[in-house]
Every structure is written in structure tokens, then in C-alpha cells.
Amino acid sequence: MKLGVLKSWDKLHHTHYVNACEALKVNYEVIDILAADWIDKIRASECDGFLCRPPCDFQERKSIYDEKIYFIHKFLKKPIYPSFDEQFIYENKRNMASFLEIMNFPHPKTNVFARKEDALLYIESCRYPIVFKSNIGAGASGVTIVKNKQHAKKIITSIFGRFRSLFAIGKIPFLKSKTLRGLKYPAFGKIQKHYVIIQEYHKIKWEWRIIKIGNSYFGHQKLLKGEFASGSGIDAVGWVEPPKELLILIKDVCEKGQFYSMSVDIFETEKGEYLINELQTHFGAYDRPQMYIDGIPGRYLLQNDMYMFEEGHFNKYFNNILRVEHFIEILKNSK
Image 1 (cartoon, rainbow, N blue to C red):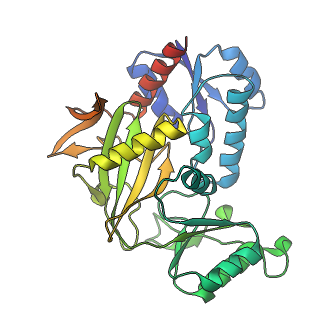
Image 2 (tube, rainbow, N blue to C red; image 1 turned 135 degrees about the horizontal axis):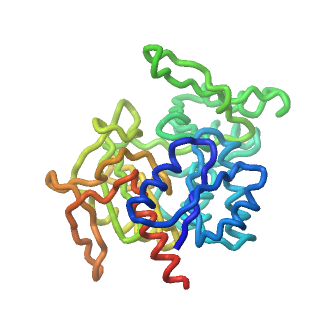
């Protein structure tokens, strides 16, 4: 068995796959998917399948990566992990909204507008506050809570242009500097143009992160920081037992989507509803256990329709031990 590890812009993410392969003593080859001769490299590698990690920083980079793994999967007929469909949804809130709506999973009602006039008509009669989201962006970096029509109209006008789309300035996100005492700066490379994603606003108690990789399940709370529950820092986590109905929900999501590796972020609203907020086949996670029950690290395994707790640290190398093990199992079963 030989696995290909796809390398792109990031100098670090693919190394977690490499570390997992080495720990499991799996033969591997690192392939630069951005190289001009990347197709020749894929063909010559003789790999049984390819481990992927798309970028999540810029929309254009994510699109380029999606295009390349599409051809690897569709025309070169090479297995990839995670599956193409779950990576197509990854860091693409437009696609995710369509999936959740078609599959009838509970989620905040989300409207995607590609015409300025449609977006302006919607904000005339919608209930405020509403939530504007960018298509790509980790945490709350692309999220704006809008409390009135004037603010909403200003964003829409920037995104679509005041007179013509050619003159659209776009919605410019401002990020906090990690070195200059939190000073905010305009991230021009992340400008959003020509579409808006508007989501219903719900007051939440917290957010649950539920993870399924193969037959391993994990869960914990993401606690509120202001109005948001985004982030994976240790101080933002509640290590409590996840509700079993959320484990069942993620199982249903993965079965219907035929997903291999998925993190589902689920709002628990003040009204007691569970609403899916995010689907991420790759997700922010420090190299630590992703679940503690009564202070004991571990995972749930689904056995005979029962979720059985197993003690241990199963999330090493940023969850990639589990991903590599699962991919090898899939490849062996396909032969």
C-alpha cells in the first residue's frame, strides 16, 4: 500500500499526513499539486490513493485545488481522501447551504443571492438581525451580524457595485494583527464580490462540535465569546458529554452525503433547537484529544447501534492517524 500526500500552498498541513503515515509505517510519496507537471507526477507515482488538504485562506486557491482533485478523482480515476463531495462542500458555504436544504437537515435558513435586486428586495421585509457570511473563512472571520436595513444595503451595494458590477468594491474583511496589539487591517486578498449569503439569526447558548472519522465519534462544546462560538482554543471548549442525538445526526449526515471525515458545528439555541451551522471535512484542532468524558480522553465507537466509550488519545497528528487508517481500510475493501 502506497499513499500520495498532496502538497499545495501551505508548508505545514501536509506534514501531519506525513507524520501519520510514518507513525503507522505506511509507504507514502509527497506530490506538489501546484507543479506544472502535476498530472505526470500523479500518473508516475503508482500510489493507491491520495490524501488531500485543501486551503482555507483564499477563495481562488480553494477553487484551484478543487479543480485539480476533480480531475484526479473523475478522470484519472484515483481514490482520494476525504471524498471529493465533502471537499467540494468544505469552505464553501454556498454549496453547504444547498446540501443542507436538499437533504432537509435542520439549519438556520440561508439565502444565497447572485443578483443585487434580489438581495435588496429580501432586506426590505426580512426580520432583523440577519447574518452576512463570506463563502470561505475559518471561525467568525467572514461573519457580520447586521441589525438594520441601512447596514445591510451598504454591504450589498459594496458587494455588487453601486451602478455596475464592474465597479464593485466588494466587502473587505478586517482582521486583527497578532503582533500589533490587536490592530485591525484590511485583508484585500479576501474581498467578497458578486454574491451575498444571508442567514437567519438565532440566539444560542453555545455550539457543539461533533466529529466523525470512520467509525470514531467525538464531541465537545464551543463556548461563546461575545456573540460568536467560533474558535478551537482550549479556553473556548466545554469538555462535557455530547448529546447522543447529535452523534446520530452526524451519522445521518455522513451516510446521506457519503462523507468519510466530517466535523459538524451545531447551534444549541436558547429555544432548545439543534441547528447545523457548519460542515467541515477539515477543521481546526490542536494535537490533543477531541473529547473528554468525566475528565477521561477518548472516543465513541458505534457497535450494534450503541455508542461505546473507549478511553485513549485518538486524535494524534491533528486527527490524521484516524484518517490514514480509515483510507487504508477503504482501499483494502475496494480491492
